[in-house]
Length: 228
Image 1 (cartoon, rainbow, N blue to C red):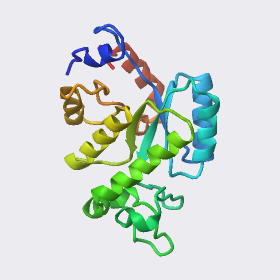
Image 2 (cartoon, rainbow, N blue to C red):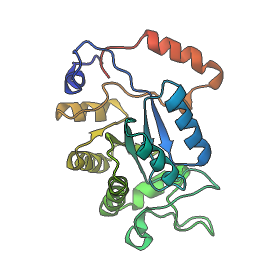
Image 3 (tube, rainbow, N blue to C red):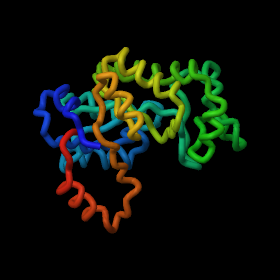
Image 4 (cartoon, helix red, strand yellow):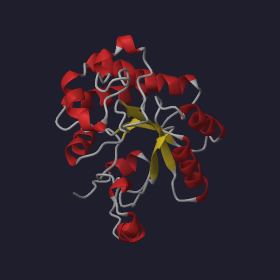
């Protein structure tokens, strides 16, 4: 689907401009991820990042962003903890958001659901508790004196959950942020409401074979369409 130039105009660019954001998700997840993102921001073509507030290396990431206010970043709203032996849980007190917590493996209660049990998460999550947690994650960033540019979310496959999508949009509107979404239907819904977002479904490079990644990037750049 071709861009109608709406997002370009919102960003102050000509309607026929070809715009590309190369974003590094998961800032704050762990030390190795942080070091890779920092290096890519300084030496590579990465031009923005997204912060995972509940993760153990979040403070290290926020310190870098505080020292580099010129770097745009988003809040990578997080309610999934996907690794088997490296987990994280809510910023909110656990007793306030019990529907977000995985009751699964012994010794691992109190963390977010992992990726494999996302259907269980979707079946049990309460929207008011999810809003409380997502709002808390945004507020942590703002309390640190940082100003994000947008919201998106980590590993969460919302499918046809319009209620969760509407929650994301509500928070984006309230905090004056753009919203990055995945999937043509969500993109069209945002654009039909005049809201800034990506014109095309974004590429998650995690899914690319490392052996062919550089060639695939070159191909995508040659074919880059009009729009964001």
